[in-house]
Amino acid sequence: MAVIGILALQGDFEKHALMIQKLGHETVFVKDQIALNKCDRLIIPGGESTTFLKLIDRLNLRKVLIDFGAAKPVFGTCAGLIILAKEVINDNFKPLGLIDIEVSRNAYGRQIDSFIDDVNLDFNGAKESYEAIFIRAPKIIKCFEGVRHLACHMDDIVMAANKNILVASFHPELTDDLKIHDFFINHFAREGQ
Image (cartoon, rainbow, N blue to C red; front, side, top):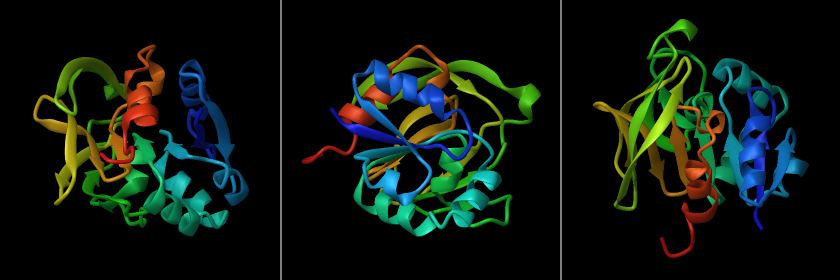
């Protein structure tokens, strides 16, 4: 059983915890380095990316999160994707820079423009459809060398990975489908991959 941390500074971290528990793993709500040190993997949930980053800096978590992400798997959803990106084109805050992508915040529109639609998942050649929920979602504008595309919505990349960092523009924790959490916990960034 793995210990999966969820950065619990804001956002819907409890929904991620339910998904993890359904898969039979332990969850830790991370608000400090002591909690982070107990984790095998970390999820950074959706929320408001600017608020997240202000809290990360106020709580002196930036360096420990970067160090954790250099060594262990991290999954960022929606705002978590923005926080993990190397560059955000329409904001002036500094993300953690753990995955070599360029993103645009709220690129799919405001809250009223949120939508549900199928995306095409491609996990190691096993292609399938997945119903994804997009809420004020960021858009991956550019992926640089070494970044793999794992899901697309029409022509947009909505899920990507680089080494042990996984990101998604949408909210897998708001569905009943455990597929993406299972992939992150049980199959992503395993030894020998």
